[in-house]
Image (cartoon, rainbow, N blue to C red):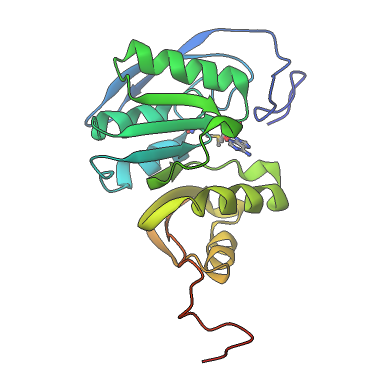
Length: 215
Ligand SMILES: C[S@@+](CC[C@H](N)C(=O)[O-])C[C@H]1O[C@@H](n2cnc3c(N)ncnc32)[C@H](O)[C@@H]1O
């Protein structure tokens, strides 16, 4: 999305504030979310996000969970409502989105949501699950770097669920992830979207074959 105000993934959107609300209704949650200009899909729940939230399995009940690219918070708040004991990290590079997500979580009484800039998550935190409608439009190199950075913080056995539009390269992203060592399967395909389940990749260890020590 481009506009006079720039991209929704800018750190500080230039677009003049235009506060609004999005009514978000799923079978198990109902939120009225504050939105604004300069954030992703500020006028309605994104259809891809809806597909993700209607198809993803329940999150682990506890531990640290991640919404990668939280926007104004529909994914993070749903995760938190479905796993009230867990700490849900909601990260974004867009400061306006981070602020809105934090405000929306507080308004919904979801006090275990930590809405922070992507560089502010303590480095030792590892995630039992990641849910994301990732920012494909940042371009392939940035997308790949972002996904690798966060997928490598899954706990062993942890899974990420990503929703990606078919015409924005869901199938080639699945192949790329698999090639990087993240076993990836398609778990849902609905209208224009695919939901991918991505497993943590095995940590390099003494038992794994290397170029120096082939099997
Ligand atoms: C497709 S939007 C999804 C927003 C929200 N989760 C939703 O479903 O409405 C992707 C989000 O990722 C954010 N983003 C872009 N680059 C990022 C990065 N490197 N790290 C974290 N978030 C990023 C964007 O600012 C945007 O809010």
